[in-house]
Length: 109
Length: 228
Image 1 (cartoon, rainbow over the protein chains, first blue to last red):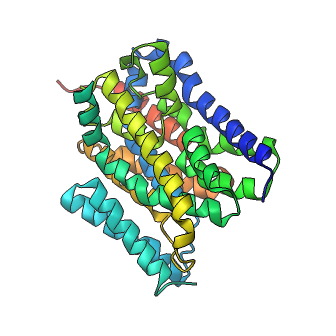
Image 2 (image 1 turned 180 degrees about the vertical axis):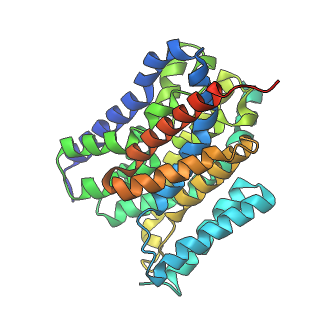
């Protein structure tokens, strides 16, 4: 068990860095809001950012091993459900359930 | 205020309820790592950056130095720098409101507030949405830590909720682009190049490559002679 003072300080350090990264860029970027280039970026960044975050979640997938089947199957279920019903909750629960069941049963280590 | 809260409950329902399995997984991981249950709620409420928190648990359980934690937070969360380009902070009124809005600007809040359906949202509606997401996350993490011992050790894989959440947000954001295929393709190529060239710094490298690629595309397309 770690020392309580240390675990709390660790949370505060992580939070301070995270907040600074979230807040400070606004000060620098506010004058640029009217710029055509920033507007061009701002309409396209959200989709690009989310695609990269999905890739980040999957980047250490062991593609040559059978246990990689669980996340891949769950990804297909999530995307399929979402393209079909457009219901975020249904897609997330369906995908997570698929992954949990596969990873805990047939594909368990 | 009551009406805004009710609207925000609807706005946050899909993604917010997706926080449930993720928060449960996070809380369970905290207690499995030997940390106290309250630490799950505390870290979820104070840091409020889901993907980094999963890494933080491991580091805190291993008692790594605080500087290492700060540097990892910087590297994993530096992506938020790019969110200032599009997050509608100008609609949020007041210093306190703006301060909270930046504090609670998690990936999911960013995705929802920059989506096409959010173009008419007031600052108040955005703040309520962020507060609700914050509460869902802190609440489900605490619940996960308290109930974690009830989940058998053989049950694994709840953390896929994070991947599922980003997949849903990506599909919605790509749909909002209305047939702008190059943007998701450039993003996927940026991620692939970052994975091959800078595997240790995938997020930072991929976001930088994406920004550079979009800028290059903007310059070349705006120079193209227009046929009227």
